[in-house]
Image (cartoon, rainbow, N blue to C red; front, side, top):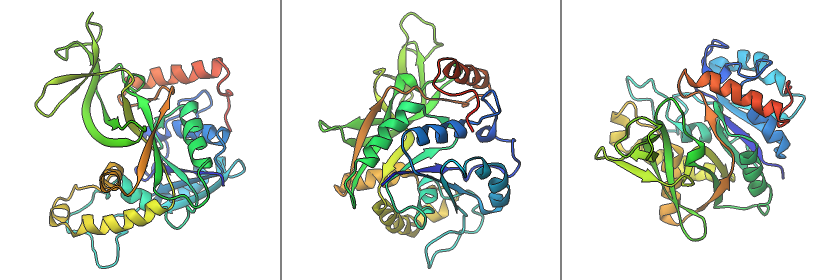
Length: 313
């Protein structure tokens, strides 16, 4: 069974062209999302599903979905703040969505095969799709509790224009994920955190005490590229009810139900394994406005070396 690509796109705005997810960075106005879908098709994926806001549906179908419909099977699902289990209601004053794993949960009715979850505004690169596509397509039919995460090498995920946030991963001797710890300030810098270019620069992150901690170039980090089977939806549904039943999550109007929260629970309980898949892909994206031109240039270099055609679709 061919796997499905599941794009988290509910953060898109309703004004087409106004957000970085829809910024034309390729020579013919291609977005980062276009390259992800092109790579997924090359890697053998058979369907693309987007989770978007319901009020964006008509515009999305006209301006985005129409590009792909004759290339690969396409479906939509919708994330809304009021998409809650029976017996729960939106806390007064809450306007923030419920987070990435809530967005994933919205795909339950349209995804019945192994699937890969990605962000729509990260350039993951071809090898990453090949690696996760191979893992998912080789799973025995009916597989459960055996998931995967593409572990990008941290040195391949940095911005030249400032710090980045990444989930730094640890794995066991079998290559299975043991923890994901979100580090919000990672940069290539000198020992004291000063600017890149110093003779003794290393990749470092700032810990909870404000100290800079060095990490190896090949340390795996999560770029939110996960591989799951449909049983993951059932676990998410059950745990989301627990999440909503916790008073502190209802009182905190910004509390979010994140993918790593669900994954860590399943790992810690021994319910599931998550294999960390290595990739040589170099991530890039538009974390800072100053990253834009570099991203345009890198895409052009991939076209020049024959990785992509000048016009994708």
